[in-house]
Image (cartoon, rainbow over all chains, first blue to last red; front, side):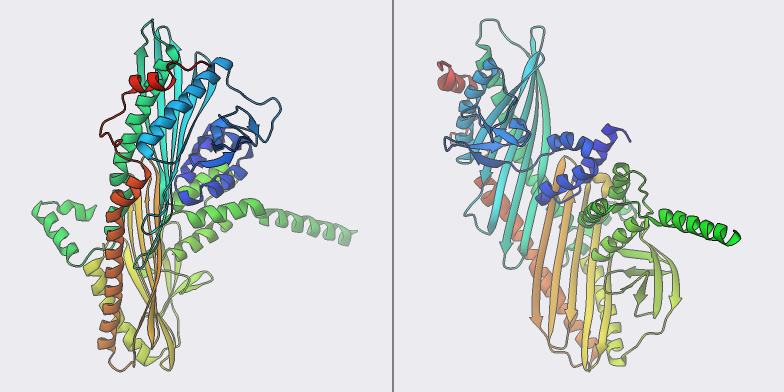
Length: 271
Length: 299
């Protein structure tokens, strides 16, 4: 079985297992395909966690700042635990990374009013790639035992002649555990993914770093906002519809059947 | 000489048999397969097994270890099986090694777990209590009506079984409805299990939903309830009615609770996670913002 097919089969299995146990799920599947384990870990979206560096500053641990078992802090550009021959962004890119973290922290304030953000950059041929990450916890809300939002924005930036191509993949991972008297324990978790591409011609007399930050920032704002709007219909709406289509409120079943009959949708019954 | 040769041959045959009977999965693989099948939402087990076979060399969907996990998965999820003129809900309660017991009709059934079909039916003699039989038969009628009125017929079903005798009994009721829309990337599974004695009725809800078109979103709702009841086994019709009325009331209360929680999502949870727009009520002016924050930053 080809490596690509194994990864595909693994991803298919993982999208069916409970998202609240993502760590365990990936670890289990990775154990079945040790040769593809590394690639599998990089393809999975799971809630982000925080680590603290020697300056006492928290930073997000992710696949994008990981090398082996160590994680790089964007604050001091060091790996924790220390690592020999580790991967670092080039000097120029590191400057862009520092600026990005400042810009994204402002975005975090405006949209999240709390939580934590970090950006990580790495070099690529003809460009670079970066991950813009957010981790926000919900505390003190009614009925919420635990609640967290993780945003994983991965952007690939390539230059083709005078044009720059931006490809953004945004994953939002939610994990909510509620407890209510008449409902019991209510766990709603999972992830939604969206991608977007844009190609632009960058005018000549422009600070390229600033241009990239503006473009990436506005793409992320657009896409995260779309996912945020979709939360109601997809996360909430779909799971609610699915449940309420198994067990109806009293009288609702007859009402629905009447509607179907009136609309001439007899066929629905025989699907 | 002959005897030695014979013994050697016997040894070789034995060794060959042992190799053939070796399970395809080693201990670690088996644990993982078990975990994966057990945690897959109902309706998707066959697909998951197909994918597992792509990851494990030499594994087939009809491997006995795989089939045994599939059996357990179906029992835990109260799978509805049909065939031979019957429709039965299987569970750990009526499971007996490689067959299932249909107490009402005094039958045993063999099931194909991949197809969810009943492949053969046999007669069996079971211990019976006439009073409990009567109550069970009435419950059967009431539950049939209850499901018709409140549940989606698509793969819904129930079981009623009893254990014990009139002096000391437990009646088991299981209700399930499966909403399988694999082509639209979503499935739902309602399971409520009830245990009724002569003094109370205990319920256990296990409600699951899975949507996986642009991601993987799952709901898992678990809840235990209990309500006192007095059963004297003297008027089976009336007592069956009151049991189902209690179940109806409890399930409705549960649904109302679910609706309330869902109603709170946008206001309470999502607002607390990420705003739709900043307080300014307008999107960010990126060129101004970026210039202000890092325009003059010397690094």
